[in-house]
Image (cartoon, rainbow, N blue to C red):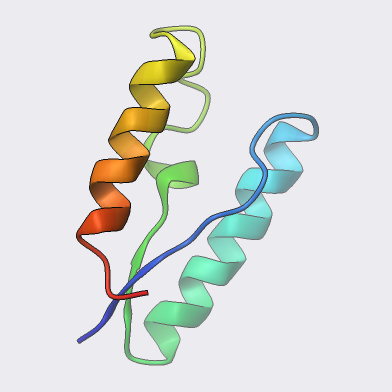
Length: 67
């Protein structure tokens, strides 16, 4: 199975963005892939660590994905 990183805007309309990423992740799962969706993994964690923490973590996750 291929691991697909789901990316998209997070800030701004936060809830709408998380729900949009969720729909994309469900699409990937239904098509036989594995969805890695940071929107769902860390939803609303933004004030608990500096932005750099999340961005660095995202780069680590992306490096382990197929697409």
